[in-house]
Length: 282
Image (cartoon, rainbow, N blue to C red):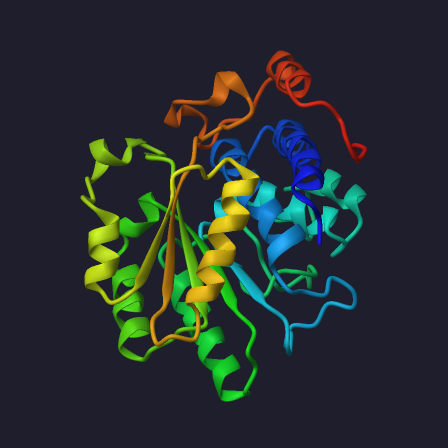
């Protein structure tokens, strides 16, 4: 388990990985990836019980994580590699021909750490609930985690899944919504205002935990541990995490425009200069 200080040292290296991967192929989604760095680093290096080697799809007695908003694969791949699932040097194959690191996570090439193809928005919560129910049937007390974009919650399947999880008392799941307020066409309020997500999930029967500092590893670890304390009590658990899209790269922040745009050479150099190398680039 990494300390808070160690987590804070991993964060800038993951940011470097993200911008380098997307720049190399002039393709990918840096904005949302950068906004969720602290969350995934905290989850994989401090909170979650998991075994990178040998990786098992069954994952008995292990916690599971499902990335529902699969377009932020750069941060997912970086954290998986940095936590030991596959060699860091494989990050250089991102989105290239015959790579295991597709633009959205897939399973057909057998990439360790990926248990479901994702990126078709709205589906990840349903998958996570199925995995959580399977663990219950197998008397496995591990926890299933999932991550979702706030724009993704405009998909109806999310609310069907939320209703089902509460009705069936799926209390071994902790879902998190990345509330960066941005999506591909603009702010979430401009595209489709969703009102109070806290009120909605509570009305659907979930325990809801607010995380206003979603780019602070100390706050994230505290919120995740609090969420773990709420499991096993008859309700699914939701963390509403406020983040900044493009966090850690100043010219990418505060705008939806970096949702799916790669930095050019000059912008890459600028982004890297804002994040010192800590673990070694690939």
